[in-house]
Image (tube, rainbow, N blue to C red; front, side, top):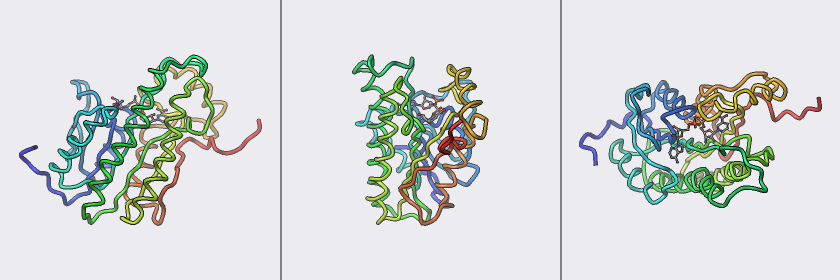
Length: 255
Ligand code: NAI
């Protein structure tokens, strides 16, 4: 347990995968909007990482190690007093893309252990704290899924299956937590320029030019602003929704 307990007069967020990419942008945007909290990541911050904003602390956790969730969440609650927002952002892609006919069980399990089990059990763990706590702030759980949940990319089946399941996790927790006024949403990003997509950038350039109505990549900040809109309650009387941040790819078109 940490010696110093952080003042709880500002809303407290927990962001998984918060060190890099979309997660880091979410930490920064939440901080800009008055949040404090926890940046959770598999890897420890390196010398090249920009220091976390004021009020945010780092906690190391592999979200696939579900039996470690409890002790990390307990430390965060001890340090900050409570949790108002959980952002389930940590996720892993399929590298290299593999035909659905060739997916190995161990690759399938690793993907689902992070993207599905990690998201489910961390939501469960944090939700238990939330329902037993009082807070003056708007409370929410926001999970980062993917447009892969909708599109049948059969060269990354395990990713698509896990991200589709995030939609059901969202609905289930939204239904269960509504009575406690805790709002649960899913965000579905499209092509976002991050370390995850760097290796596939040339192929994605073509897809963006041909298939994305807004004709540009998304940025981590696009996703972070959407998450912060949800976490600050700017979409009132709304829960269990799936919000696309994908440049209009859901518009049916024949071209
Ligand atoms: P990234 O790979 O650039 O960054 C992911 C961060 O999560 C890293 O800091 C990494 O260390 C951390 N992480 C990975 N596995 C973890 C684990 N088991 N436990 C804790 N932390 C872990 O990824 P990016 O692009 O920022 O993606 C963030 C989320 O957005 C992921 O869930 C991804 O599936 C989703 N997404 C990304 C899209 C994109 O185009 N970049 C599109 C749609 C969804």
